[in-house]
Image (tube, rainbow over all chains, first blue to last red; front, side, top):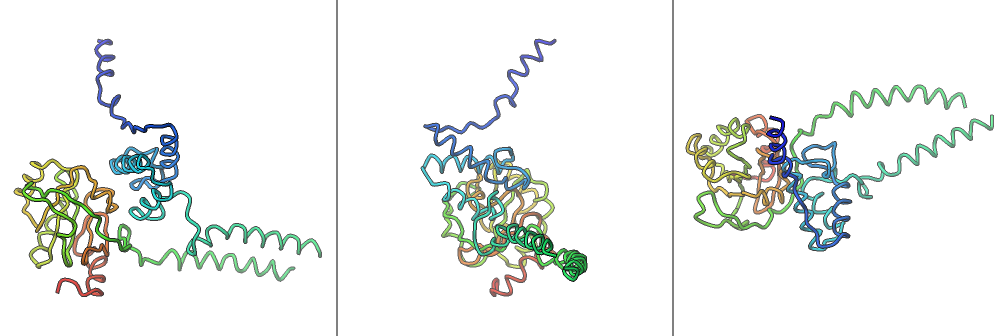
Length: 123
Length: 174
């Protein structure tokens, strides 16, 4: 009986179901792996593409792999994703007028806090 | 210094109140609706009967594009509403998403066909280019440009909230 179960595991679909992304060189593969860690899964906003096996993520990863093989730059690939699935699909938001508050408010708050601290010491 | 501290103590609760009652109460945005405009992607796909090839230039004027599949349960629920849109004379174009051709044809003969044109997107390549994450999803197109996108089941109330304002603004379907 045990042997039956073990052979079942060998022939089960799940073992072979992982999608394989083929690249001609290691550099492309590394670039691909870095990119999918930087891009959010469109269906499950809490995880990255690399952590997701939702159908749409699989499609998107295949598309990104294709674009990497075509030597598209990281920026081109990220723009492609952001234009389809929104700016929120990039983990690192771009620096633009709409995101100044996001990027600089921590420093402003820090400065304010520091100035209050220094100001208080004088008295 | 004491004034500053007092100000801080007063301003903190006020800003919290502001956040809870003003910022969190804004319900202008409808979850699932997206108004980013973009051009209809270039595509070249067969129709469901595999009789002809449909190109992006074949979609003219104003129409509704609906992503559906026979495996999609929610599509069955929104189906009667699409039928009623078709009856009202609004052109509805279907994108059959990652579906088996025969299953899709059977599904339509069972529930009725509200679509003027059905694009068979077996690999989901066109849908990916349109930013689709699943089925059902619905787009409003005006002269080759997507002007509204809704993720999920559409019905009368969604139509009135998401699509009707844009249709009125741009004077579509007249």
